[in-house]
Image 1 (cartoon, rainbow, N blue to C red):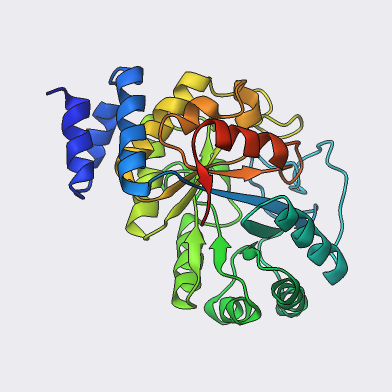
Image 2 (image 1 turned 180 degrees about the vertical axis):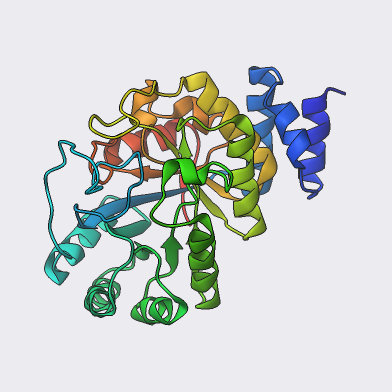
Length: 321
């Protein structure tokens, strides 16, 4: 029995794949790795597919220095747009539009280190209105909030909090210096204590090692994260990462496949940058991924919901939570 087959059987028994095993999997033949990862996905998760969209609920002039981000006030990029929290009417309109397209989750994402208490109160009113007028799940990405603020968000009707780890604890200081990895972890734990589910992954292609990628997912696993977004770096002009080469499709598939071994029961969610690899993520969806962020990203164009729905049907998935 090959090493890939041994690890597949271990994962299907419900035993955790360890770091050294995952590093070895990264070196195994890609086609065998993809096939095994997809089998794990099918046997553990079935053919369900979780699709969500995001809305840029507050844009630009972010105080944080994340090196990949067009909205950081530290860099001169083409993203000159800046506005405060969107109105209730705009947020509700977006929710209704996405629900009509068959989207299950609608995530409100805001720039900045964290929303203020006043901003949390304002957006909670919008969340309440969305829940009154739609049946779509509401997710939020409001920065480094505390437990009391998350309790308000949950009471308003949101069900999930997003806060990306971005990379490993080792590599994160190379990505951002204005907040810490520990702050991110505490944010996720605070959301969980408030009774919210959490969504946390990162970006591939920042200059990190294979070990960093594995460590990021292992941290998410230890935190009990069941929705793991995988972004592929879009090197935005004006940011420190503008000269980096986008990840090749084969490398993206390899990472997704190994991540499936590590978190057999999670939604591995292709997010920003998948339009850069040529097939809209199809090969990654055949390598163990089973969720996506659809539509436009925060400051870059994405893939339309209509296009994604056709791909989901082609691959034999069914949209469901």
